[in-house]
Image (spheres, rainbow, N blue to C red):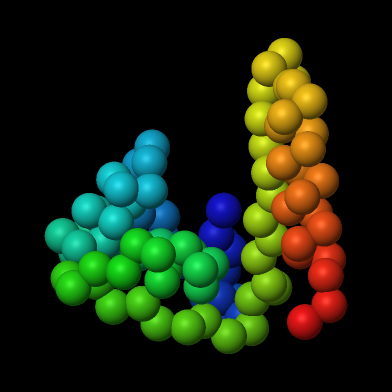
Length: 91
């Protein structure tokens, strides 16, 4: 989910294919790639062997709740409403 080119039009080469965030962070730590993360994710997964650098000029990222449609319950819907209310509250 990263841009294919820089803002100046230079191609951005693809790194190794990973399947989990932890695999990606391990690849970065070993010098085999880089990752784009939203600020809260980078902060939560802070590591001594990786430097997180803010990137300017890319659109803000958006997060969302997801769940399997077949497993939807009243409790999941209530949780989704609570998150929506919290996120849309002023301040």
